[in-house]
Image (cartoon, rainbow, N blue to C red; front, side, top):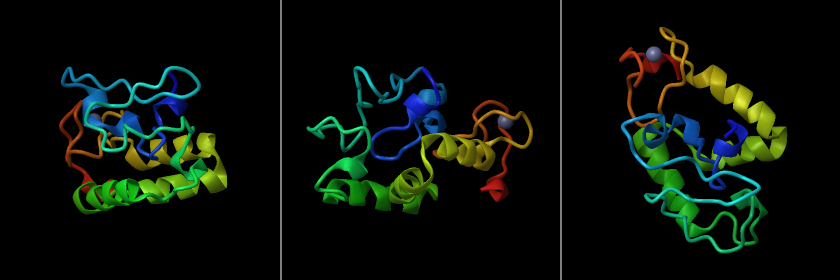
Length: 130
Ligand SMILES: [Zn+2]
């Protein structure tokens, strides 16, 4: 599974997800180009038309995506709509680069999760790096 494949249709980078990073949870990313198994907890898992990204959909941005975006902006300081706009403008590879820079742990160098304010790998707190 590549980092590119870990970016979900909604713009969530599953590599930054607590469920993906550890804790034995089931998320393995939504993936691209093959079988797409949306996360169990995903509120937009019922999307029907098998787009690679939500912005390819005629209903974009749908209310479900807007609600998800609002929840993530409020709770996790991350925006699906912002991520999708970035991908649309700069491409997926550039998005991965930006994400790797933005979320790299200053202590251990691994990717931090958006779901916690500490690094899951080394417990370093550094909200300032966002
Ligand atoms: Zn760390």
